[in-house]
Amino acid sequence: MQFKWNNETATPERLAQAKELAEKIGMSPILADLLIRRGIKTESAAKRFFRPMLNDLIDPFLMNDMDIAVDRLNDAMGRKERIMVYGDYDVDGCTAVALVYKFLQQFYSNIEYYIPDRYEEGYGVSHGAIDYANEKGIKLIIVLDCGIKAFDEIAYAKSLGIDFIICDHHEPEDEQLPDAVAILNPKRHDSTYPFKHLSGCGVGFKLMQAFAKNNGLQFSRLIQLLEFCVVSIASDFVPVTGENRILAFHGLKQINQNPSIGLKAIIDVCGLTGKELNMNDLVFKIGPRINASGRMQNGKEAVELLVERDFTKALMDADRLNGYNEMRKDVDKQMTEEANKIVARLEGQQHRQSIVLYDEGWSKGVIGIVASRLTDIYYRPTIVMTIIDGVATGSARSVGGFDIYDALKSCRDLLVNFGGHTYAAGLTIKSKDIPEFCKRFHEYVSRNIRKEQTHPQLDIEAEIDFKDITKKMLGDLKKFMPHGPCNPKPIFCTRGVYDYGTSKVVGRHQEHIKLELVDSKSSNVMNGIAFGQSSFARYIKSKRSFDIAYVIEENSYKRGEVQLQIEDIKPCEQYT
Image 1 (cartoon, rainbow, N blue to C red):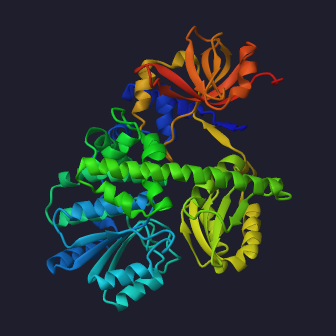
Image 2: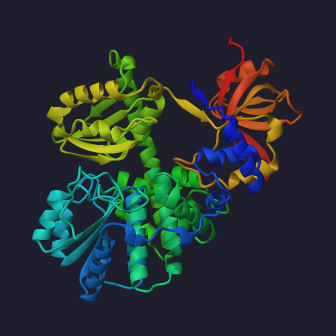
Image 3: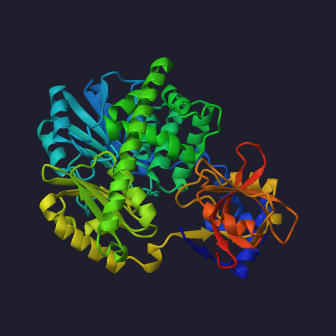
């Protein structure tokens, strides 16, 4: 994949500002400039960034309807009403349900949780779940990570005497809201809450924070719940800034120091015991195993594991989820191969700036992953759908800077339902409307996507020399963690580097390069790894110079030693 490098040159004014900030915080001007790029320009702001404090969490009662939600929850407990905690079947929904259920269960026993079946009930609040709640005498449902568009379902529940508290973070439908007792969503159009980007689990945490505050409970009782918040923040790709950074920072600390039994079991089956977990581990190891439950069977199994109290049973449950994840990988691989063949066959597809594919045989649980893979391969907004009984269910994924939610919104008169975020969304459509939808979706993308958004890009944060890379710099870079959207791992570039003479191709299929490099500014020999870039090996071994874009990391085998993870290589001469 050929990346376009975006390398913004700092102005003299910004360089001077970075030098001044660097002296105050005891860091190099290079890293001080990274802070400035993130909007952190003062010593006090830098200290808050590097040491996020739980005391800086926002007052939960600043969220619209929070007082009403807490009052209704207190009333339900006071009247001994049966309560249902209901959530989506993905990581965000399952962690949110586990968080709220686990906390409330300490004080109240007349409570249960419910995860809808992806295949039988579909996304969001289902009529079947409401009928079940009515049969069980449930009077209050706390719905997490969905519900903001459940107009008919919540009206139906109300007719049966069942109240809803909605905890969601998806975009609402214009200014109209369902007729729930309380709607907690920082993206409400009338929202007064200062931070808009909480995960669904994060909104659930704010409800529990408000409940604890209202009932005089110590905040320390909420600390362990932060492990669920960080898993949801990592897996749902919400910005790791503001309040999310505080929740993620302390959530990672909790999961590394004292994980709950359920998460400890997942860590064990992932082979991560004894390792200090980071956001990548949550995204690529922990999250997929929680997700696999809802993709291949029922997400309720994931919640059962997350709230489990017996470690022996938790290990058995985690092993079962691990098995689901292996099944998911097989289905994912097969579907991706089929989808790639379809893309290759479509006449003129290479000139189209978006992809829409559908097939009756595809698994509903894996279409989102396949959409993500196709987006990575072709770098175009992509929708993958499966059709069951004349209705298509789809997942949409986008490229940097293009709002896929707005693209779907432009076709909403054709859709039965849709929802999501800028980069990921879901939709339901009658199969007879797919041709018209494809036509209008492709037209919308063609009109609104910018040329640079259709090519993979790397945002280079600083051009440096090897002499700038020290163990102190590595230590200071760790303070920028946790990483994620809006706070990515910094990508640096160095120009005109050479093979030291010992670089070699590695990997089962000889697809990677293990590098030892030098530049012309120092005698430093830098170790690096370039995954999937063995096509450059011949050029590198020819002793000709090349430019590299990379992330500075700690060598996983030699603690404290610097290693470069090479993101891209650009030969200084034409490769032949």
